[in-house]
Image (cartoon, rainbow, N blue to C red):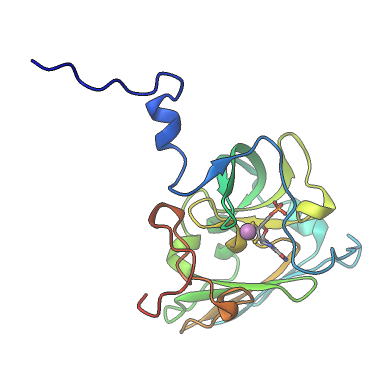
Length: 203
Ligand SMILES: Nc1nc2c(c(=O)[nH]1)N[C@H]1C(S)=C(S)[C@@H](COP(=O)(O)O)O[C@H]1N2
Ligand SMILES: [Mo]
């Protein structure tokens, strides 16, 4: 039997497998924001759920904190090719929050709205994954302003631009409509494992 070519011993197979194709791991946590970082006063902070819902929701910060709190550990992949592994996020799981609004059956997509005007669209189904949450803590401390504090969305299964910072609303829609980066050529589906970085005119 011929000897098999040896694998690079420095790179464990499992570590390689945990990073999507075309990504490199960074220990730092880069800030990636288009435009200014909004200044948000918790006294006037509001979170709305509207559109195709039975019950419009309008939460204050105090009300938000009374919702069941959860923790999720997940990797974060930016389309500009950096990945930050094993982030500990704490906050409210999307599944729990959306229950308050009683979504109408015809709602299939969600536009996520933010302070500062940023938006991103997602299929409702993708947000109902159990690791999708609204986070106000990261790696054991309060979520800093530049990373989306007081509250950001975290969607581990999608590229980072879907993890909207400074979120203030969810709009339930029957049809898809492009958000900020999606209008500028980014892929609507944004699966890092399939390298859905830019829209190819097919998906
Ligand atoms: N409101 C808002 N959310 C945003 C962005 C933004 O510019 N504005 N950038 C997105 C992009 S492209 C990425 S990769 C992540 C980066 O999050 P971070 O700055 O905490 O690393 O936030 C996403 N959420
Ligand atoms: Mo990004």
